[in-house]
Image (cartoon, rainbow, N blue to C red; front, top):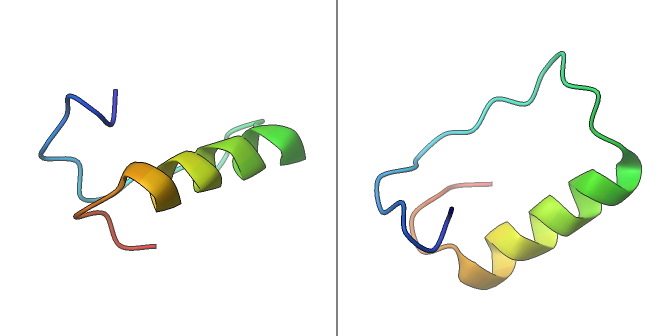
Length: 39
């Protein structure tokens, strides 16, 4: 999704039951492939 969505600027994950492992994977993906999303 991040590879094809060039307009994603903000991602709200509050109230989401994402696991610690899921957060780790998502963070790594954003850090490695992100050019516009601010962390």
